[in-house]
Length: 236
Length: 142
Image (cartoon, rainbow over all chains, first blue to last red; front, side, top):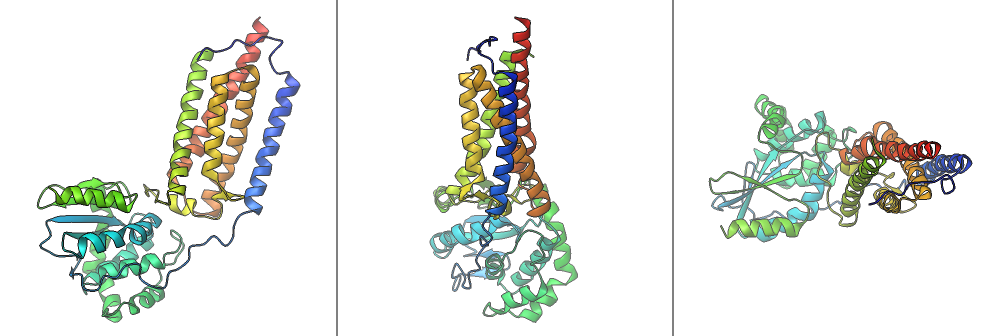
């Protein structure tokens, strides 16, 4: 890149520069006006009334989904308020559940990383409590289908009760009681620090653990990426 | 700082802007998630009603602007320098609007967007502006 030395004849005049910068200010103002007045007010996330994945018949115990005998474990760190986690659950998790977990090739483990705000911890208490009834994965999926904006107060007890009541076999009163217990509260409060100590950078984060080996991080962007990583792990 | 160093710095900053805008554009069209990092917020910002202007994703506008500025830096005539500084000024002002949106309207902050709005866009505006001033200085020295 050889810089061209300007001369007095080819440089823009002072008037040209002033006009250009005034034009820039006007262009910016016009851009902001178009952006503000032309925004799409209807661009809100639609709530899907039915589960995006059928977990019926898949073994579930506590925070684990899938056969306990499976040697490969897919560890998911998530925050119920994180839209990226909703994306993972709605777009990638169904493939993981149907093609890897249901056939018994892989089991998947939930770990909370409630870093977005206090409502993340509140939601995590209910998710952990659902785990006591082996319904953690159903509640997590249902919460993502009803997810609101980050820290805008959508994690209410009314919503949690309504969502939980739609999950067959889940005792809602026991769920609410367990979610308020000292043990679950302590676990949920500690989850963020534990995830940070494990080097988890954000959510969703996925790790693969083969047998007792050290877990390693994988990319979360597409179902094909996650599937390829699981195939590699299954081949040893 | 020599004009050559300024030009190189402007090109590097514009490349960084192209990379960030390119990543956000890819995430938009690949319909994939932008990983939530400290503080979260990227998906909220990306999916907000403010993420598009007349149906065009803001990330695409950024990508086009940075690409044009890169081309102008490569071209490097006096008019190209003025054009680069002008576009960078539009970018700086629009970035200020985007910061206000994130902090006070959307109430969520996207680290990728803030990196662009608070670091890359201002740096590019300053570098292209200083190069323009340099032109006048050199001419006065002729």
